[in-house]
Image (cartoon, rainbow, N blue to C red; front, side, top):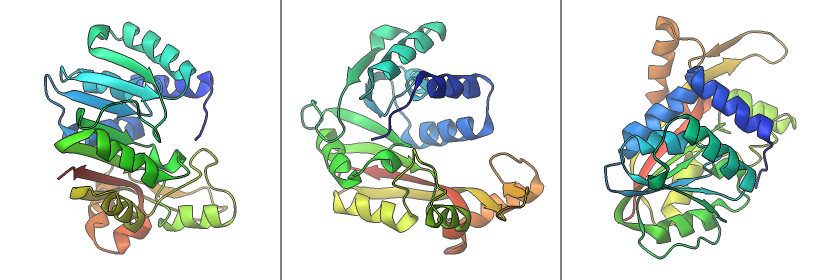
Length: 241
């Protein structure tokens, strides 16, 4: 698993407060798809500095914020207090995704966003998440970068990929992992059109450039094959049958 320092967490908080497009697009997708409800028990995996926890708390759900780094929990507690969040509905747990301490069928929903790319054995973690999710419960999974994207495929092949995201996935790999661990996918979408030419300071990024052209390119990601090689992010909603 990837370890982070306090500077990383502080940068994420700054991006959140400055309404960075990439940060808020991820938030909007997982909140729209997961749809946490008042009174539900929601597991936030890889909770980090607490941004996802903060957004989930707006639904009046009870949130278990899970991370294996004690530093992340300390920063998250400070951040949530600064945001005025009712900490009586937030429970911070330091734990291991491969060996969760929760009982079977505990959670109504799980946010597994931007985590799978940091794991050496993702299926083992997904199996544990399946175990602790209630029948009919929802799991939101997102991952970045998409290894099938032409630019990122080139970068990783040359050893120039993201060191933190050491296990990037492709759309088919995400689907296969969910199927192997008995989840049923109910929604799947590729997002964030991204293309650049190596060694040239020019890029097309739908997440950082909002204009009619990039919005059209973003819509084009629904085209099979084309979407797989041009999208940066993979999003899936799955349920436990």
